[in-house]
Length: 403
Image 1 (tube, rainbow, N blue to C red):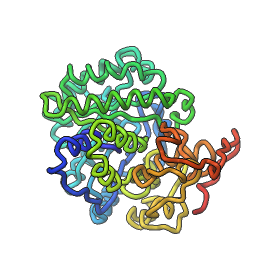
Image 2: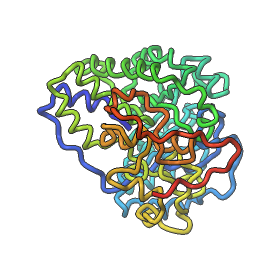
Image 3: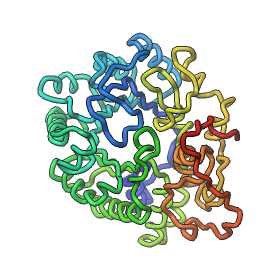
């Protein structure tokens, strides 16, 4: 996750910047349920409107919460499927809140109405994120449900009326990139305080639809738009929190923005970005799925590290006998191809490894969604570049290559 507005403020007021601190434990994104009332094109969990057997019981969730707390996990993002379909979601959330976690809820918003908004507000969520994929019909097509857009926007209104901090998430694809300016107008119209731009990731339905990923130049144009919006809004009435995710090359591209607009601060921001370190998969971000399986992050559902039914999360997360986790936790990851040759890998951390894995079967190959050129990345001798060979269709992937 790249906190655009936070870094913009560092540019605007460098003297007020405090050192970045590494959290003691990872943020855990927890898919409490796989069932969902929608069937979205880019769903990483390939959810459906049906019950999935073997999901964690309430008691198993409580036991895991206690372990996460003792392991210094600072924040939980409760997700699905659609988490509001889980009957005990309010009890689980309340218990987590009482334990002192920062609690976010990731929802499509269509199930939030006058019948449950007061109960939702009483639970004490710190943040509620609702995904919007376009205006009106565009969103409905992505979500494959007529009226989904109106229901989600109504949910935002209800949350704001009850004092719940709510943000809007937008997954950028070739089908909806043109609507990005209108999405920002929507954010302003509804006085939404946070906007999260997610790049498309190759996992679940997102992998099956990766042909819809925006071309690199379109990604750059979208990021230019986000950077300009974030900068121009600083100190204004509509200074909103801009965040991007699933493409840590955004940090490197931001450094280029600084070099162009505030060249005297390039060295300072470069150091700041290096402290950030880019991709946090397997280090500061973790995932637990509906069955209790632990994954390096939410897009690694095809790679299991262990199950909280059998072992504590804390034990699973610290186990570096797994080659993928050992690689994630290395100070410098064993990157190949352009990522291995890149001059800025200490900023982006090798970007999103799951895309390389989905494409080649090798988790350490270059990320195909890096939208920067060799020249921009300081790659001068591409002769050492390892040729990327697409993974054969229909052939079962092995677990990620050994470090």
